[in-house]
Every structure is written in C-alpha cells, then in structure tokens.
Length: 310
Image (tube, rainbow, N blue to C red; front, side, top):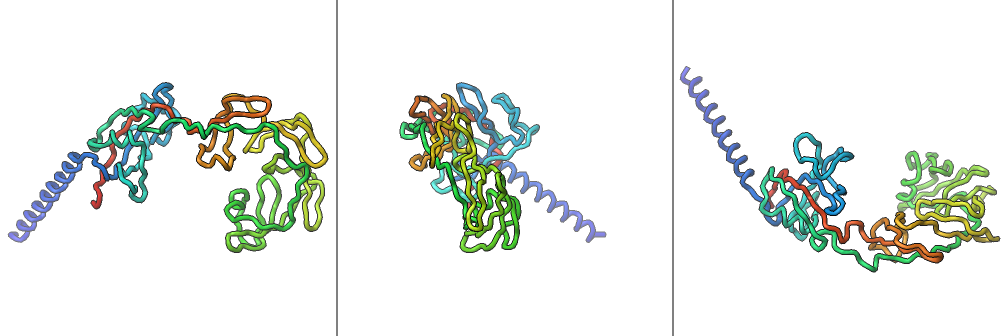
C-alpha cells in the first residue's frame, strides 16, 4: 500500500513538474519578441494604399478577401516564413520587404499590426530602362518545315505533351498530333512525328497548316488570310500582307493592354508589361513590376517565432 501511495505521489509530482515546465515554456514563448535573425511565421493581407485592392494574402480561400477581412481563426491560412533581416535566409524561408521586416521587430506571437510601406521601403520606384519601344511591323515565314524525326529538350517536351516520356511510348503533342519516344539521352529526347494532313497547328509564329508529308519532312504553310487577327500567346497581331516567302504582320494592341515579355534585352523586366502608347510604327510598353512606385499596406499577425539555433 505504501509503495502504491509513493508511486501516486511521484506520478503527481512528475505531472505537476511537467505542467510547470510547459507553462514556463508557454510563458517564455509569449514573452519572446521578434529580433533580427529570427525565423518568423506570419499571416497577412496586403493591399495598395490608394486603390484598396488586395494583391496578396495568406488566406487560402482568398476570392472574397478585402482589406477589412479579419485575421482570425475563421479562415484557413498558408503562413509566410521569413528570416528577418538576415543576409542569407534559412532553408524554407524568404526575405521580404524591408519596411515589413522593420515592422516585425519587437512584435510578439499573436500580435497584430497594420503597416504602411512606402516605395523606398517596399517595391521601389519604376525604372525607365524597363520601358520599351517595340516595332509594330514585323515579318514571319510563310512556310515552315518540321523534321519527321527530331530531338527536343526533355523539359521543353515535358511541358507540351500528355503522357509518360519513356522510350517506346507514344504521347500526344498537345494541339499537334502523336509522337513516338525513340530515345532519351543527356536531357534530349528523340521523337518521331505522326502528322495529320491539313491539320492547323499553333506555332510560335501563329497558326500553320500541314500541306505536305514526306518520309523526312512535314511542310507547313501560314494558315490565315490578309486582315485576319491571331494570338500566339506571346503576341497579338493582324495579317497585313502575304508575300511569296513571308507574311507581313502588325502588332495589334491598345493602350492599357497587357503584353508578355519576350524581349531578350529585357531579362530583368517583369514578366508582363502594360501598353502605354500606340503609334503606327511602335508600341510603348512599361515592363516595370506593377507595384513599383506604390505605397502598400500589410495587415500582419505573428504566428510563431523561432530563435536561431533553437
């Protein structure tokens, strides 16, 4: 009986000690504040100050999120992990806007704050070197040839086929036809085309029609007529004139429309730009990131703080 009593006392003591230790740990965490070098997990809603339009949020179902939406337990989140003010972010974390990192310093777990971030502490200011003039009048080939057997980069092929890229398999070249996988070596895949006569396929230059199939080559001809419009996904144009060996086209954009960045000299530019001017010979496109020059506001809440080496 004494042994049982001692055992119960010991168990009770261990339980109480555990609770005390846990309470101390919880208290310690609740008292911790964000310091430089910490890994901080946050929930947030971010919007443009002037327009009030939300451009980013950690709420998963973000379709109806506005700047008035509360950061509470009624939403599901995908928190952002930040290494605050560290030259090299910890694995699985990022650096964020300097103004936001400044605001996180001193915050505690569960604390919420609204932070206004000017351009110099946020996305910066527009760069005039990212405003480009693009010629409207271009020419593309009237005829094209595709070799019946050719080699393609594995990653490129992977993005445009349906099916497993394995030797011996036949897969669908989306929007074209089936191809056989003949070999895979050093990141290159050898394929054999199975073209379809008179089929119109979408190329980087626009729509082309299969006009002849030989053992070695598939011949294609531009499929549209003068005055017709087309969109390749990279550019929009109208057919100006069809000549013997080439097709003259004119880029077809209006002010305010988006343009995909395919300019090799603009590798530092944002992926998409906005047309700011249209003349008969040029379109002017601003490829600056849309939030450059804008004051942004973050509603942010601290989810957790992890100290370096903990």
